[in-house]
Image (cartoon, rainbow, N blue to C red; front, side):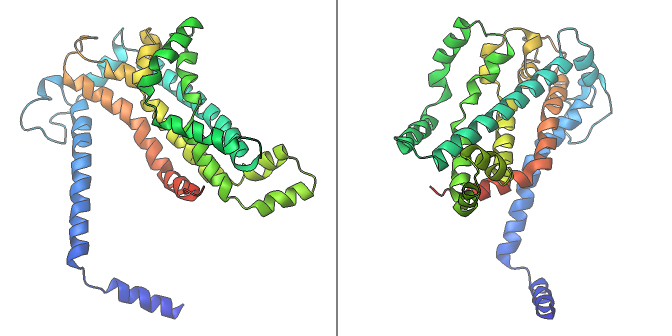
Amino acid sequence: MATSSIAIARHARQPLSVKRLGLWILAVVTVILVLLPLAYMASASITPESMVEIWPLLPWPKRLSSENFNYLVKASDVFIGRWYINSILISGAVTALVVAISAITAYGFARLQFPGRDFLFYICLSTLMVPFQATLLPIYLMMRNTQLLNTYWAVILPPLASVFGTFLLRQFFLAFPRELEEAAICDGAGKFTVFWRILLPNSSSALTAVAIITFLTVWNDVFWPLIALSDPQMYTLPIGLSLLNQEYYGTPGPGVGMAAGVLGSVPILIFFFIFQRRIVEGIALTGLKG
């Protein structure tokens, strides 16, 4: 214990090298460059519309005002509350279903033995190289022919085939000790019992990583929901806020757009600050062992 204390004290007394100083300066400059636009966006959102574009542009409000947020709340063609509800329902449903489907599929590819298992997995993995734009027309036609356009299902169903989630969980399941599984089988447990009572409870980090990545991806998606949804009241939050400009809604100026940006970014920032450790931990635990 004393040796450790001495080592820590010596390490603390080490002079700051030029390399470490340069890294600190680079980190500080990077943080400033990242936070400055966010600070200006937050500042402009609570600045009167007539003062938003007055030079110099400052990262603090010139005068406090709530008129930009009042416009978003009171405008008859802006459905902020409904857009939030739509985003939460769609993102939550997709996340829960993707985690469930990916976990079952990954367990099959990692633990079950059947003809063509590895070939099927690599076929699924190869679809990651196909851009979504290449499958856009077939998906749109399927949604139209099943009369699902402009419904929640049109946005929920396409992301459920998450090959990335299956790959991530499969890598984790492959690294899971087989001794625990074999011991459970010797005690009379079946495949489903092993999966449900042993594998899943010990895979919380990987499952959380898949859930967080899926939630953020679906929440921020604008491209497909904008095509699949036509009713403004069915829009998700990113779509509705991205259309808040003079061409679509006749908004009074950029201050309203800044307020919309704040409303759209706050949930993601809170989500990231709460779960950032689990994101890094989950991805690190899965590794790339195959």
